[in-house]
Length: 601
Image (tube, rainbow, N blue to C red; front, side, top):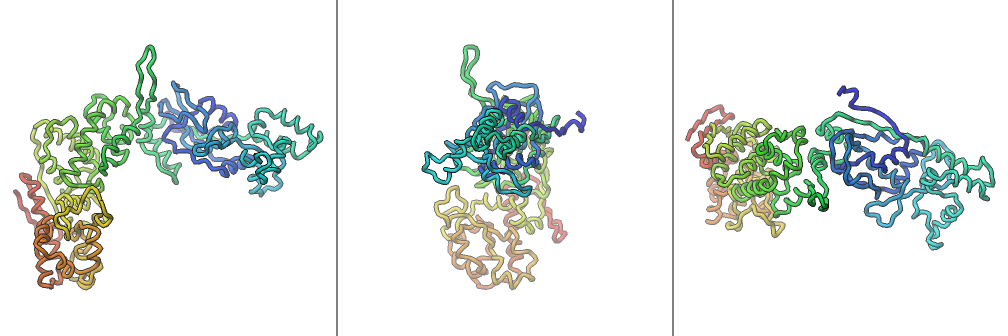
């Protein structure tokens, strides 16, 4: 298709558009947000039409793709149960305006406002006497709750009730459908007394002209892919929640529930969002709350590698668009098992209690693929895989090409083909310079490494710091600077230490109550509060070198204590990592000193 044909501006009469909507010529996909109906905004909308101001274009997407639709809008059915066409017209932008116009003209129902009548009335005695008038619309356009005086008990509405009874306040829809009857009744009334020039008749004629002649602008887009629809939707909804591919796939794969007939079995239907939300309720693990896109891409990986000729060859929006209902149903039962094993691996084997610690989100995809229909997973191998890629000096899992290589690597182990890890390389200086504030891959990897060591509480040394359920607010795990950034020691010796106190090598997990107790005190002071055999025993769970306890006991620290502490802690951490990656070629470099400290095991 020529690019010129992709975007086509057009316009249509206001009432023609609404009539076609009721005739089911337009659909609103379910990824459109819920209607936010505001009484005053509806009046302003009609005031703009009354004054022939532009409303902004309605964006229509024309496509042969069938999506899940809103079945009704404002109480009006706009989609047949068995709705099939060669081309569909989806309202991408303009749902709010469309709903407001439809319900104010034709009535209907408004969500969360039971019993409210949204049909709009017009007071013909309110005329537009000024080009700069911006307030009369409040009184010109009315809803029934502003007219009904409840048999004289609601005094503020008594005047309007009287004008309604006299035919001076009329429904908008009646001006459209029964103009001559209203005009004749007014012409013969005492108020007009057969005066063709009477302002009330002029106002009636003006409103009829508005309904007959006001045209709404449309922008029709055609011949575009779903991924482009997401981009268009996001750019025209800058202030709102962007549309993502998950919304599109939910709409596209939806299948309504249908009862059994003489010739066909009952269909339980399919709704992907409900499927994912139901899975999230399996237990209270934070991993179950990963994003909709994460779940969709997990499914895409499984479909790609387990369903031949699916067309789902990657996890990008172009290929996610190829996911079909039958694809999801084919992998779902085994996918649930694989995802639960993956989250269990993170939480109970690696002891990571939150997805925020996972260095690469692509781990979800590669590891779920490994667990999928795997009757004998090798957890020891999988731990090596996780730490090798998390802490390697190179970025090894940040794009789809690498993801594909990882899946093939894990598939070899899954098939008992004994894949071999390549040389592991780590730069000590990268570990020194990693900070929590950066929140990058290496920072998350270091925090994961600390968490996996199951650090114990400094006060109650038999108690883990990182627990699944928090019973008291003070139990909440905190990240504590062992040398507090604002402590007297750090401030007085900042020029005598090369490494900043914000380094993750200066971080430990402790409980909130312990963190509050320490505040900004020097380690010399606060470490003495915990100096007992139990604390000394749990220091390895924090990779704490013995020197910090020695300094506290001697009540003296060197001027470069931060550098010394971090260097000793770094060596302890690397030794533990070496053990975790046993049998893998393990090389350490230090770019801060340009000294090659190769050590192969």
